[in-house]
Length: 115
Image (cartoon, rainbow, N blue to C red; front, top):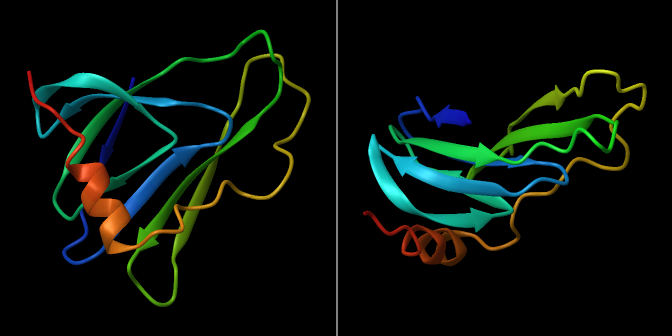
């Protein structure tokens, strides 16, 4: 379970983990119907909780990326998801943010359903 909190006053962020699916289970402390996402926008002051199915059978590392949305310049923070016993560094480019802008983000926000 991963909890992402956007403490920005203005910028939304997009959160993603290379090669993994995020299952949204909670927004702002309220349980949601579990939906799967490749990446998810977290808006200013918002917190979201995800379940991530780990893949210990594939021993390699993956990038974790959070990047700003709707800003210039684009700001990006990265981390590495390291599996115990892995000797393979993350490969390839960083997973990219969704190409769509406001409309994509608004459509995604409308998919969140509370229990």
